[in-house]
Length: 176
Image (cartoon, rainbow, N blue to C red; front, side, top):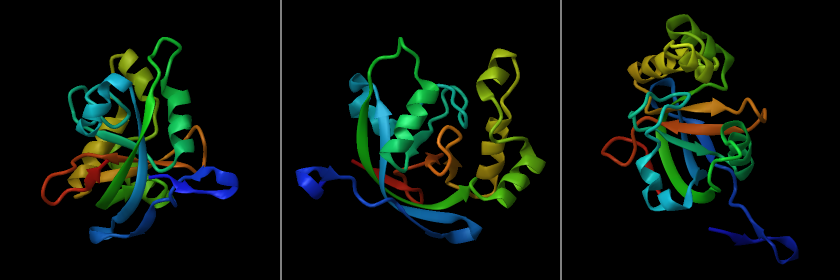
């Protein structure tokens, strides 16, 4: 929801709240953003079903950004001139059990156990290899995580939320 800002403009809601969560993971609550083609806006909460950095084809995964600037950065990295225009949806998220890949020690644990979470997954696919980021997701999920916090490589300081499960009992909750 937009709130009145200075000079009659509307301001974004405050950034999501991050706090310690269960099992050594973290939790978030707040507003997140998702860019989708207008034709898919009604199904935006079904997640992505195409291959992505942390998802195999057909593996439902919900990719969200913690800010509008994060959406812009992600779209610059993953949109071509032939892609249809996107609309940005505002979503409310309550999530616990998130693995934070902004933490260098956490990234090193993933790297030792499963491979590089930030490798060039698209090039791996083009070369006929399984992306190490898919194995990283598998390992993170096996540690009990419901999703992960992914730092933006395009815009350092920004971050994204990747949910493995949502809107079922015991999982993060997401609504429009």
